[in-house]
Length: 179
Image (cartoon, rainbow, N blue to C red):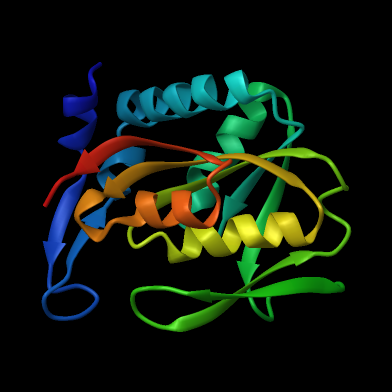
């Protein structure tokens, strides 16, 4: 399989969730076993080179990719959730995105100081959620090595924003949309 074939499995839904937005629907990609496994294999190969101690996934579509990558690398999975969804004591960061201001949380005992971390999500848009996720890992004194996503919307300049905020963090995406 090639990346262009993978891109064909992502459908654009116009005017969702609001007028003027072209939503990238990854549901067909995860539905197709060959495409899904190809994406996981590529993400896992990237992550393996980083030699992480743990994989972190971002709620909710990020879990679709982070969990199988963690399994492939025989590592644990830590999760970032939106505020108020975790039952024990948490740490929290502001996580503005294209649509609203939200907050990300992790249990305070998930990431150990110095742990090598890769973070995986489904999509990089403006980079604000990615930056917040990296901030959260750092707040827990983890060492974020890289941030990966299946889709990057290059025209929203997310990767440059991430690199500006966290120049030491490698950023990787499988599929890029230039416009």
